Length: 427
Image (cartoon, rainbow, N blue to C red):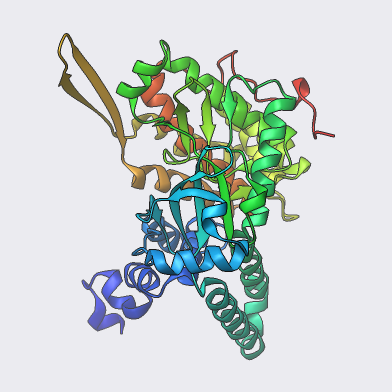
């Protein structure tokens, strides 16, 4: 009660429903709830800010499944002896997450190095059962409490269900990957960027065999300098390829963290893991273009108009007042705490200096949540694709601070953002 809870931390007052407790509970409850937590983190329009912020820390990690179980799935899916397909498979996984496990291998016929992504046993059945239960609970809650209908709870759960079930069908990831590679080739980026080649003869709904790419993350400045003379040009390439995909590809890569965006040994930029992609509507992109241009020039009135168009709900917006609130938010972007850690690494003939940028991720998330919170106070509701786009832009902002600290990625003439120079959709 009010007179006894004063001075008690909010997390304790909320008990089982506190963001911290709920996030830790989700991590222990397995794949469905980890993915649900990641959805909450990427959908600030749908969920309270304190939950969105806490679920940014929802880590998708899980102990590996024994190789014997992975081998059984491969036999079941490929329907032929594994030694007729692969020269060898490394039984020690490269990575293990809640849904899938990844192993290195080599193809028997071509001797090409590959990685095999395998859906863990029983995951799809668990997801379907859990999501159907959550959907049923949402329907019952809406029936018992009709005012919940205004929150579109059932529609949100349905969106989550479709998104998660798409992620466990590796045939769809293969389609996303191949569409991105076709876009790279059609736009003439094939000498600058690459996504893994898919080997269909040993890929199924639960198994994805793809080319193994070798390289370093875009946060490894020391290694990047050993591969290319100008790290800034690498960043320009990555930005042009990604921005181009927003307007010229069927979908865009919606998870460009350092583990999925590499500089390859041959100097090209590698885009890896297409399990999470976004699709942007022409209307949203038209508003997003204005938003990006106004952000670059600090034209907050134009930014307010663009956001009003993107999240329009039929309400009249006080654009001038909204612009002033946006200016307060974005003025804090330049004040984000950025620490440069410089480590001297001695070699036989020289001292190599490696630098890494450590950005307070909580501050970045707080900035985005402030934007959503202020926008909602004016009656705006953004589509989820806007949240996905903004999250990728924050990743690229970090890469810019490391690889090209003097560059403004939204104003640099080498970076093409606007759609008037590119085709809206590939044939």
